[in-house]
Image 1 (tube, rainbow, N blue to C red):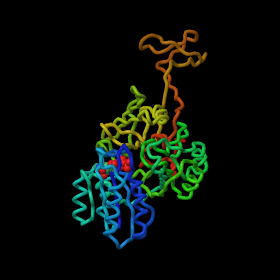
Image 2 (image 1 turned 120 degrees about the horizontal axis):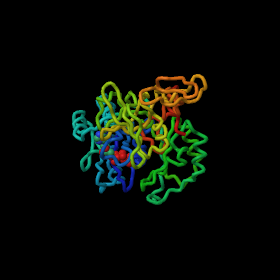
Image 3 (image 1 turned 30 degrees about the vertical axis):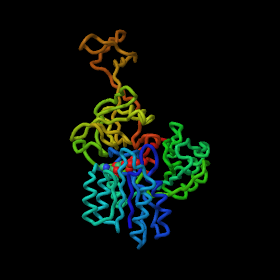
Image 4 (image 1 turned 90 degrees about the horizontal axis):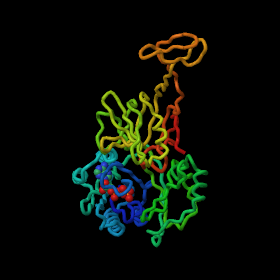
Length: 415
Ligand code: ATP
């Protein structure tokens, strides 16, 4: 059976992944857990998310269906925040994977869905579920049970001892940098070199101590063994759609809808302009229309790349659309436009710069009496190359595919 859980925590504490980790332990006497549990990220633009719009799915082989339902429900009631304003628990136990639910997952990672849509599908397929309060968590719980991952990565999440929840985390920073040095590029987003920060640990009151992301469970284990920290209560290795661009839709400017994420191809149609707060914007034009693209202040050094763009550069942009603006996650520079500078021409005889001969009368050299009609233009070097550029680790969206995973492409990793 496929067990999906979502929307159990709040800003005040707890975490759906922790609930799932405890549930795994409690279910193990009832059957065999199959493969790794799945940590599924859904549409990053979903309005009611607490943090990263995560849901969890476990696959269990067991014939004790009623016991499994009972334990899952008890664990959910025990380890979730019922008082959270926006906490609307969802628990789904599907007997098998079905194409309709896989399709529901695809839509939940890319579009905005309604709770009723999840309930209708659950009722139609006769799937066991429990939704509490508004039951919004049924969207994520059902989607997680249907998640098929053609591309995937791993994340190991280490959890804190209960007595320490809500207190500052103790993690030895030097050991984290060492772990990154030993295991990158098989692990990533543990630290942000550019911004000199450790980025793999939250600062909130939840049970998560840190999360190590990567492509290779062995490298993740090596990183874990290297990191020195406060005691770890338990840790779980999840298979996840993080770092796969599963949220990205293909489209043209005319197709884009709010709260969805796209890859668009077009030309820079105006110079990047910054506004108060350090946010940077430029218009992108394709045959169907024009859209504003933004590199907001938290994207830090990525803005220095965006500043180098000039009118005529051909790009692919990746990001989510909100309020008519595409919030950039990465760009692929396909073709650089010529950057030119014009100046008064040089005298062909003495090689000195000529002076204007008067309005509309071209240029002349007073010494040699030579004459030229127009200004001369000079090609300037570009401070940018073709290829992919990304936001730094400190600004990465969970679903965004980091350039370190783009094997065979020309990439400029933010490192
Ligand atoms: P955490 O990362 O701490 O687990 P979260 O950011 O995952 O928290 P949730 O508390 O799970 O946030 O809340 C997200 C809510 O949005 C859930 O109820 C989930 O079912 C719902 N949701 C997920 N995807 C969509 C979607 N595509 N459309 C509408 N609602 C969605």
